[in-house]
Amino acid sequence: MPSYRIGRLFGIPIELDLTFLLVLPVFAYVIGSQLGEWVGILNDTLAAGIDLAPLTGDPVVAFGLGTIAAVGLFVGVLLHELGHSLVAMRYDVEISSIKLWLFGGVAQLSRFPEDWRQELYIAVAGPVVSVLLGVLCFVAFRFLPIGGGLVGAALLFVLGYLAVTNLALAVFNMLPGFPMDGGRVLRALWARNQPYAVATRRAAAVGKGFAFLLGFLALFGGSGINLYLVAIAFFIYMGASSEAQQTMLRAAFEGVAVADVMTPAEEVETVDARTSVAELVDRMFRTRHAGFPVTRDGRLVGMVTLEDARSVDEVERDAYRVEEIMSTDLYTIDVDADAMDAFSTMQEHGVGRLIVTRGGDEEGSFVGLLSRTDLMTALDIIQSSGSESAAPSLRREGDRDRSRDA
Image (cartoon, rainbow, N blue to C red; front, side):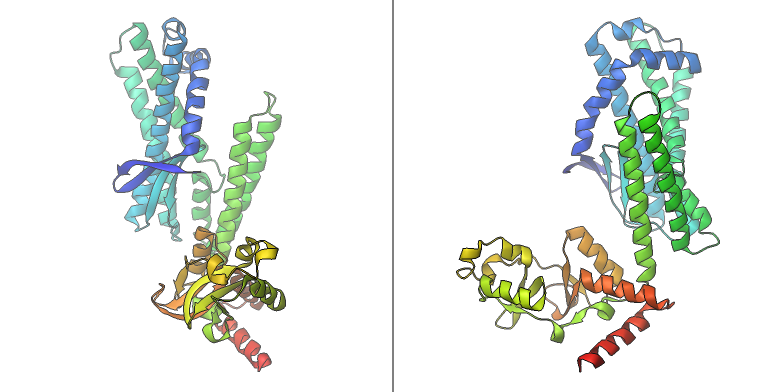
């Protein structure tokens, strides 16, 4: 979904996802239509004494009040994520943005520190901010001299609503639904006395179990199917699975450089830019390669894939040249970069191959090609070797392959 930048806080870009712009009016309508229930809850639990009559006489007033409460809720979510971000920045973790979206908000951290204390402090910072906001709203609700009438009832409702929802936000986020805050706290505590990857696996397993439980309650809780909770359960499950996979890959590729797993330049098959698309498809069929670097007069000028070739009708492939369909947006990586960085780059840009250069940009000399298949093959070798140091085992495997080829 597209997102829209609305400003910066402490140097961190603040973005609104399209889903947020769609869900905000829904939240406003739901809150406005449930004013009676919410006023009853606040009067019963906080002894608020809110007069409901001025709030429900006009639908415009109800929707306006719902909008104010919904915006206040998302401001609380934004400050919650800002709490995570400011503590993370203290540990030199880069924050690309804070984004408000369908499920609230997310601080897009470049990484979570593997030091358990740092992760613990980052994880609890958000709920602490939410608790402080809830307490602040409650103090204002209880002790500010608020008059009667429509304005007084509306102000009491908004302050009471935000006090309750911010405290509820803190409690919900501390449930052990990894990758929520509570799940990250759980991983940090487990990481005190066991490897980080093992702690991640255990926390992810708890998160998946929590997601199943939440989904079951949302589907069969007795008050009808709650599709929003089902979606949250799915989000938690996918997040736990993704985090576990990423951590496993980081652990496996520790100490492995791009140079250890790439195909060297002298072994890379290239295709000339003036080759016909028909010849290209025939070559792909014969070599079982789905992509080639493209050269012109010995210089690297692009990449062409099977998808590019398929974009040309079969009857026209003799008339088209590779240079007409190739991609000139070359994604490169430095030969000395970490293999995990290469994997992340492929994911970020949605590509299956990276050009390896000395220097990491298109101006650097071409030294090899790295594909997703190369990384997966390397991962299989690492996991089957059981070696504590992955890079040496990969080099030995590469030496054996070259000996067989000779």
